[in-house]
Image (cartoon, rainbow, N blue to C red; front, side):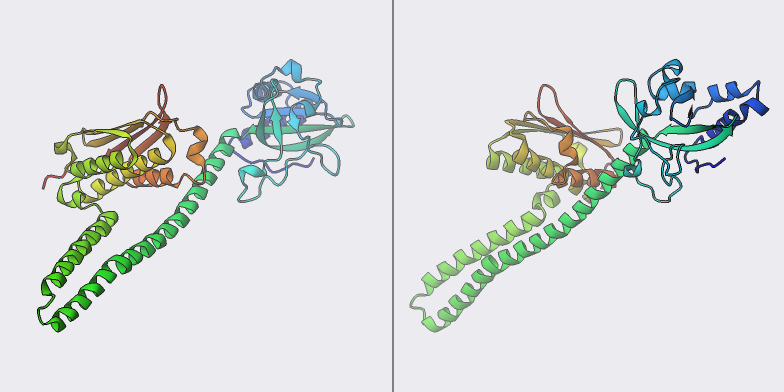
Length: 372
């Protein structure tokens, strides 16, 4: 008798049941049926023509049918594609002991009575009984395992994309800041230097005019500096705290996009540390950016309050509503960045379509209130 390697939890029990099935006529006349019937693994035996001779209740439950319906049926009705060993039956399931196996490596699918398919992992063995070959197949439904593999794969892909995007954004920001400094402040300061040179040479004939021009250039330079600094980090976040920074963000959003936005928050509840305040500000900023770009909304509501040491943040809009597939799109790096900020603070985030329409983002952050 040849046997394929068994893989997965419960394999030992399944192997024992298969062994009992194979040797039942000679060694286990009284207990083999009980062992097979109560085995948690799905067990099927076939003849050389791949006709099912026996199926236990676990196999019937796996394929959403009955033991009676499986008995005498072709194996191809329940497995697709039907695997064939080059040396003849029994069917085999590839190198099930291979290290690093991925969910996509499962080439065999089960077919339930209603026609739905699901991934299967299994092993097979053969025994000669009364001159005829009997093939015993042990099957396991690996749908949950495959879903976990796929989720991990999507997560790793998104993280790689996020890392790449962050590097690109960092370089773009550096280029933008360098251009701002050169084009605005650099030229203004060069102009001021030339005005000072002319002022020294003018002998007071056009002093007032030059001084007026220098004053205007200085004011423009100061405004440019403030704008560049604000783009890097809002001054209101340091000077007024999170509440006033969110108010400024809300006002800027309404002015720029013409979308009504209401902020419900209590200043006293938002006296948080610098890292927490920055994270919440950036999360709200990213949420509003996504709404402006994709939601086609007319109204936005931001609710932020603290309960029992946790900060609860909700951002709702009445736009088109986010679709399940949007969360896994490669281009949804803003959503990935929001998730990463929340997870980095040991928080929870959920993004769902709201009723009757729109999108709702709920975030819970376990934070301590700043006492200084």
